[in-house]
Length: 276
Image (cartoon, rainbow, N blue to C red; front, side, top):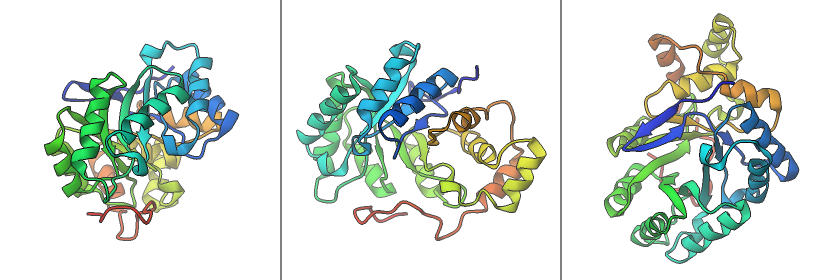
């Protein structure tokens, strides 16, 4: 069984590949979580907004792995990040997951109507209360991230954002690295956009891998980077984890990075911040 290596930063460690669960619903979600854990995943990512935390918890309980060996992430939706609301959301997530803590709690999106002093203070209170072992943020721009770090009284360990070969995130990744934070890529395969590109196809043939495995290898081979591909198909779940027994050359990594384009962003809701 293959296990993902850990990505370390400032005393914090997180498995380099996790199972994303966005739009995984009901028993399909529970089965996918159980399959993933049985396949060697030790990192499961969910969120209050996904509406599936109870099924993620069900899948965890159906596995044979001890809770202490698993890394569970959930997130607080942007409408609930004010002081008081955030703590209530975290507690509700734990009830749905049937866990006494998560390993990582993230603010899912910033909210321009909620001062960061309020949201970050609430996030830190959750950590001090023992509801989350680590905390972080998602979908912040550089200025927001710098402000959040300056306000935090507990370490912010993770920045989770959209990242795939079609989207240049070099400015934001540099900011996360400057703050000693782990970068987690959601939508790491770009919903399949880019997998048909010539360089990806050529490398898939060269290494005897799928195009998705080439892109995931590109992800986890970058310093301080975690990826959370989503799947509910057992064969694809196993395939997405099997990327730690080969490496891409430096020029191959650079060629994939050059696929980025100005219109490469996929996720940008109306309440998104001004992107860097």
